[in-house]
Amino acid sequence: MTKKLYYESAYIREWETRITRKVEREDGTYVVLEETAFYPHGGGQPCDMGWIDKIPVLDVVQEDGEILHKVEHFPEKEEVGCRLDWGRRFDHMQHHSGQHLLSAMCLEAFQAETLSFHLGEDYATIDIARSDLPQHELMMLELEVNDQIYLNRKVTNYFVSREQADELSLVKQPKVTEDIRIVEIEGIEYNACGGTHVSATGEIGMIKLLRAEKQKGHMRIYFKCGYRALREFNAGMEILGSLSTRFKTAKEEIPDRIARWDQEQKQLQAELIAVKAENDAYLAEKLLADRQGSLIKYTFADKPLKDMQNLAAKLTDHADVIVLFVSGADHKVLLARGGENELACGAFFKQHLNGYGGKGGGSDKLAQAGFANGEDAMAFYLFAAQTLSPIEEE
Image (tube, rainbow, N blue to C red; front, side, top):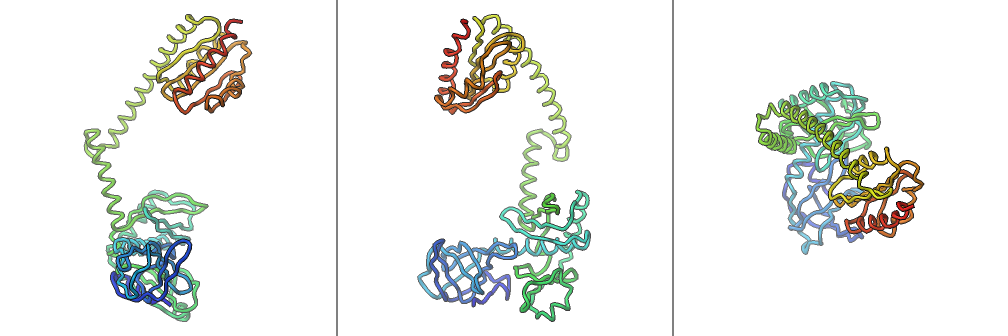
């Protein structure tokens, strides 16, 4: 059985030990050490990583009391030197202790038990037994939990028997019945836990609650601790700085400046819609006047499909015509008909699109299709124009 140094101290970074077993599996190469400070996956906490004789440790798992370390290849020696990726380990310590503190404050403030904990690469989450959590309560919770960090409460861990555990006010009863590991935050809680933790709440640094959202009838709280929280703050400040430069205004005035900018954009959009409508009306009159027979065809360099649809609607609403458009910008072809014309646009596309690599369809009165490139779109457009020309002559 592997001796677990991380239970003796979470602060062991380097040690020397001996390889007791080597395992070759389909998914990789594993070694078992006589003693290890590499923490395996468990309890919502990811595993540690680091190096065994400068060979990267890729994964750490626990099986039947043994800790298996996945490595790139077997070390050449049996006696090896080991080193943790300390930045990763300390990040996990900050977040796991931060989770205990946050869960304790949720229980105290809202009588809401923590149902699960997950520590991801970007953020950590807890799910609490509560159906809602308004923003003002989330902000109050954040202040409460950071107050406990600043008090720098002592965090200790130790093993107790089942009888000793029964005498403690545990957050929840442990699944194991002997050698129960307790993590105690002084004056806050006793928690049965096998994870790695800081030695005092001050080492958590800070807890930033990012948001809360409903998850299967409960509330999921997203948060970051310590250095991750600092990086989150720095990233936010960088964005604010960019916006401040972009809008040529102070950071605190950005919300008002964005509100004005939004209003300006709405006004410009309204003006653009009006200009488009005027241009479409003019173009519709020109196309109707210049047509020969019932077929109206036109090639657009960069007209979006929605704009082609609007123009086709103007044409077919007031005339017994067939409209065929192609747009070079997004490789789209549109076919529409108005009045009493018997052309079934959707059926026409269904019958002929495959030969040109197009995808689309529609109703009897309107169909549209997209193509992989402009050449295919134009080839189909020319084919459709030639095919539909006899209809024009009838």
